[in-house]
Length: 495
Image (cartoon, rainbow, N blue to C red; front, top):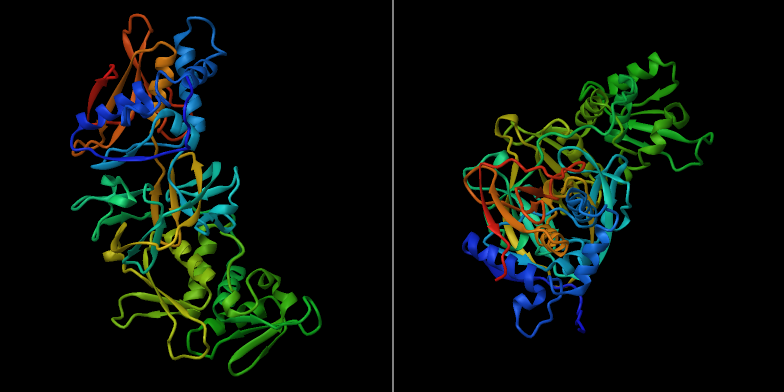
C-alpha cells in the first residue's frame, strides 16, 4: 500500500461533549488520517505499516512475553520524543500518532522570543539542549529544540503594558472567572477572549545562592542607576567612572562616598557627580558604559545581593507614582528594564510597563517606566486587552522542557506546551497487542481538563490498567496516575 505523506497537518474540530472528543480520538487510533475522510490513507492508524514497524522497534529490547517491559518502553519512547499534552477544550486541534511523531509537538514561538536563563535573556532560536530556563516556578533544562518555519502569529495585548505573541495552537494558562491561582486551565491562544486572565508567576527561585558583600552590591546598583564610564581604553590612565548625584537628595551619593572611603579608593567629589578610576570598581566593565547600554551580566546572585542592588537602583531611578502608593522605576535601557522586572519577580512583585517615546525630557531615547503594584493589590494574572492576527507570518521555533511550562519575561506570563500523546501511546500499545482505554480526568471536579492512555495488563486477560501518562513532569512516572477529583474511562474499541 502506498501512503501519501503531505507533511504534518492539524485539524480543528468543535467538541461539545466528552463523547465527541473520545469519538475523534478513537477514529484516529484505528483509522489515522482516514478518520477525517474516506479518501484519505490510514496514515498514523493501526493499519499504517509504519506504525506497526515503530511499535515493534520500540519494544524490540524486551524479553518475550514481558508485558511490563514493553509498556515501559512505549511510555519512555513517547515521553522522550514528544512534548507534554493535556488538552480538553471546547475547540482543539487533533493529529494522528504519525503526525505527532513527525512534529514532536505543534506549539511555536516566533523568532526573537526571549527566555530567562541564569545568565540573562536568550532568544528562542539560540537556545540549545542543556540550557536552563525558568518555567515560572523553577529552573528547568531544555531537552529538545526545533525549527518550525513560518507560521501565523496571534498577538495579545495585556494590561501590564506588554504583548504576548504565539502561534494559534499554543497553550496559555488562563485563570477562570472567579477562580484562584490553582484553578488555572490550559487554553489555546486561538480560544482566548477579551477580558481573560492569564497566569503569571508568583515568586521566583533565584539563579544562585552566592552573595556579594553589601558594599559591592550597592555600588553595582548605584552604577546601574547613576553611573557611566568614559570612552577610553580599558584600564588606561584616563578610564574613569562618573556616578551622578546631588548631596542630600536621594542619599545614594552619601552611601557611595562612605563605601569609597572605607575602601581607601581615591575619588573626586564634584557638585553633581563623583569621579573615580574605573579599575577601582572593575565590576563596572560588565554593567555597560552608558545609560542605554546598562544591564547586569547575569542573575547569578543570592537574595540579599539582589535586594541591595534593587535598593540602590530605586534610590537613583525610582520614585512614587502620582497617587503616592506605587513605586515607579525608570530607565532608557530596555535590557535593564526587563531585568528589573525579573528581579522584582524574585520577591513576588508584579508590575505594569509603559514606554514613553515622546516624553519631552532630556535625550531622544524612549523611557521605560515600570510601576510596581502595591502589595495589597498584587495579582497572579494579567488581563487580555486586545487580540490581533499579525499581517505576516513569522519564522517560528519550539522547545521541549522537563515540566512543559515556560516563563516569558517580556510579557510576564506562563505558557504550556501540549500535544496528542494519548493517541500515540494507544497506537503503539495496540500495535504490540495491548487493549487500551482513554481516561479523562478532572483535577478540581469543576471541568474535564486532562486525558491519558491506559493499557490492559496482561495482554491476553487484562486484570489491571496501567497508566501511560507521559505528560507528568520530572523523571519517569510509568504507571503513575495524576491527581484527579473524578474520571471517566472509554475503551478504544473499533469505531
